[in-house]
Length: 413
Image 1 (spheres, rainbow, N blue to C red):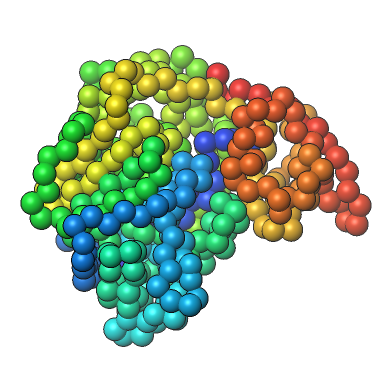
Image 2 (image 1 turned 180 degrees about the vertical axis):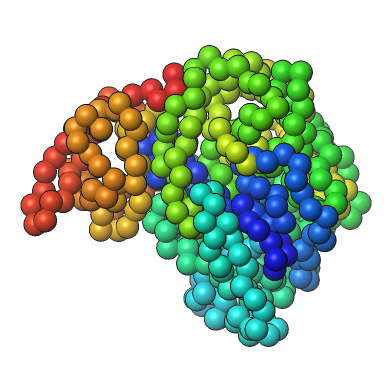
């Protein structure tokens, strides 16, 4: 990511359940828009990753799976453990100011470099300070003098239910062969040079900017999509030029948070199949976007995905070659912005029972089915939406509380 970058593809955390507010600290660089533009990519040198040392032939890092995200944990000092989300859609690594103060690299914490302008999905601009981190250590893999942006990960931590200390962007792994093994819940790192071909479907990716952009097929049409492990969605689709057919027409879904504001999803179900290499998804649920199309964690979770930046290729592997079917998208009709004490309503799905019950953006929820919201992490709430027919929400009104029941329904059958 360049210091003059416009952004839109970095920390993009979106939830597959419309009952959540999704956090999207979307940072895109050099015009590589996050969920959808197709080919307006300026010719700019890809960012350098700093110094990388891998002192063993294979580094195996256990990963925590939350929703469709993979988190890795590291402890190299008495202040750890530190947790990081791996985001292949991010062109920069983001860390908290506290971590940057603890391990300032050359030039200090922020230095005199100009801030980076980050454009959110709503078009508004936020500026983040730049810095250099002295080191990051993950087992026998060590990254030194890492260029970073400083970002308060508290909203992301609240959304996922665990403390997050940073988001690891794609350029960090430039000198490695990185494998995201979703079924095995682990991340593998190897030296990049002389990497052997792997079983599965190998696809060439963007070579000029070392960006995980790959060709994807919708029917007989091919378009570019960003591999974005920092998104919880399945597919984000820019329909321009594709003329997609839908068996379930797009409708308003969750309210998605970004670094600079909120936006509203539009999601539907395609009528045809979408292919990644030799693997096909039948009638997938997609989020429509006016930015770069993207493949999120909702798709990646079916695969072991290996990124070979040295040879500009990525390999998808799963044991079965059978077409993959995607289930219905369920929703409670309300999206949230979370804090430990309460969840603030960020958006309400039109015509849902939540709207009929009078739930409005800005309302404060203190309990879900009688339990304080502090006890509801992402996984528990997603399971509730997946299984329940209705949910009881307790709202704070001044000093009193009132309950409302909202029905869970199939937003996209």
